[in-house]
Amino acid sequence: MSRRRRVPLVLAAVLAAVVVLPVQVASAAGQRGDYVTIKGAAGPGPARYDRAYVEKWGPKRARRVLVLVPGFLGGSGDFSEIAQDIVRRVPDLQVWAIDRRSQAFEDTSIFATEKADDAFAYYLNFRPIGGRSFKPVDAKDVPFVKQWGLKLALEDIRRVVLKARAGGRTVILGGHSLGASLTGAYASWDFDGRPGYRDVAGLVLIDGGLGASGDGPTAEEVGRRLAAVETAPFSDLLGLGIPWAAGVFAEVGALYARTAPDARSPVQDFALLPAAFKPAFPATNEGLFGYVFDKDTSPPNLSLIRIRGGSLAPVGDPRPWQDGDITPVQRLARIFAREPGNGAEWYFPARLGVDVAAASPLKRTAVTDSLGLRPWRLAKVDRPLYAFQTDLSEGRVLQGARAFIARSKVPRRRSVLVDRSSSTSHFDPLVAAPARNDFLKTVVPFLRRVR
Image 1 (spheres, rainbow, N blue to C red):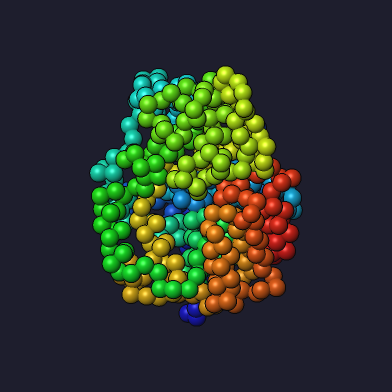
Image 2: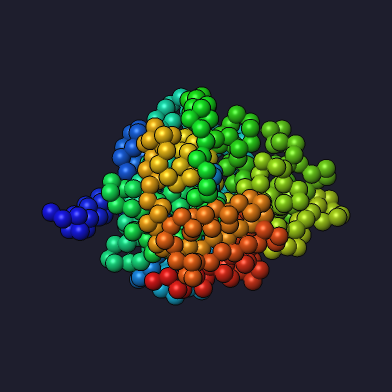
């Protein structure tokens, strides 16, 4: 049998294995998406974890699908606002936002009730609610997570892409931050002889990506990082030794900001909240939430989720939040305070970060061979590319995008590179008010042209 005949049969076999279980999702503003489970690749660990999760926005009969991948410690909820903005402006398009398989570790049962006091008591004070007690995942109980790397993540994404392609639909693949890096890796990946770029019609890189020159980390550097994964399989953003803390703090704060924005924040007095997150005077729930995430007051380790939102009011007891820049704080609160499909990944597999760094040059090296990575097909990639850059990377995002284009067959005239490093922070493209969102304004024409 020729390869031309073999490939459709392979795609059909994969699609036949996809399981979709729909759940209706309501955001704080009342909009709804379908949150579904899609069977993923067979990976290390029990088969019940071989799942990806997707929230779908837009018309069900749409002939085109934009699949979006979240960044480091990000969840599908990151795209819940921008997805709705996009489908309102681009005809005949759905947006599918991915949650990685690690979503299965999250106990979001109390968050789903939308009762902020109960969530605060349950997740941060470990008080039983309704006969249930919060039991965080212990890395010792899930040792297989040490093997959840780039290859598995891309295979899961491919199951989603192939499902999106069913019935002859056109798929555009994109992502934010590390999700943009996964997008570039997918396009360049060799899936058992089939290059990933053939599955998609275009690429959307939101403040991230791969393809810069160089050879990536050395074998010694990778070895040190792999050793660290052995002792700490989950990434710990806050440095508290509690990997899930960043996601839980964000969702508790967002839920208070959404349901009781003007009340004095009880989280501000919580002993385990890092001092860098606490203003010098009492703040409202909305005020504290904005203070933690705004670029002018957010601590350095939260640079990946900073916004340009505004500031605390100069007076008040407690002090309220004042929107004054491109992102209204309630849009940010909505992406975190939603279930299913919150905006954080509580248990991010550290091995994925190691592999992404190793694959960053998008070429075959001794390191990629040792890790079983296959980023070999960049030279043949011929799909139009969109890249958006904020203030985070100091110009490296567009440098990488230009290198990606130069080393491939990406059509320059059909590609779009946007630099907003002087006016936009890393998370703003996903949550800025539509009238002030330069990402939305520039990606919409690109999406309309990709067929």
